[in-house]
Length: 223
Image 1 (cartoon, rainbow, N blue to C red):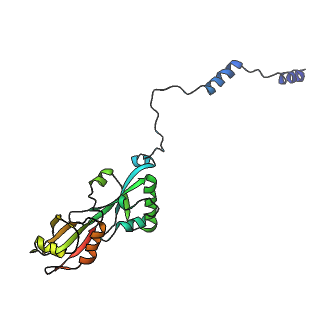
Image 2: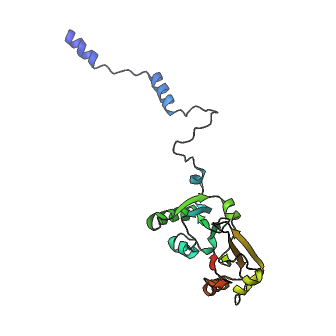
Image 3: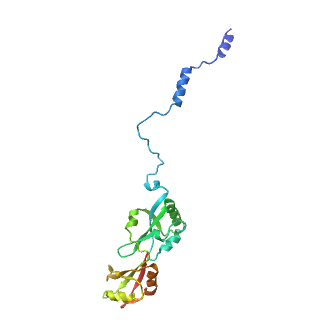
């Protein structure tokens, strides 16, 4: 009899409390509680504002490592495929007209990133860093139309410099005589503006290492 009773008990259906079941389903399916607390930013959100810059729009960088012999065409070749041209570049000169770097205007962040990759791949002598638009606006664009004459004698007059430039087409009204501190004597320079790049290059080709009075003059085209 005991065995029969145990067998009967084991075959009783299991009763489920439907009230508890409905409550559990409600908790599982109910939306998250409303909160007035602001959501915490994702840990993956970049903190650098530049990294959040849209892929479109101008981006500026400054290229370090250039010398007085570096031309814009050299950098255009270096950054081939980055969608920059000669008008997108300005050389930053110090007070003695030695280049401290080259500002470059990129059409997008993608172009800037491509330039970083190009420099890492084939131009390790250069370094590109992010720059502000204000730095671009501050730099005077010479555009290959200005020439710097270095080594002018201390006793040379403006007429002597003009005779040195005989045969060149330039704007004499904008010529500036400058002095570069040096030891043992300061170096006199002249900044001369030309109407075109062709005329400035002609002056470089025909006058570089020529003499003004007894001094040999170095001629350099400013980029």
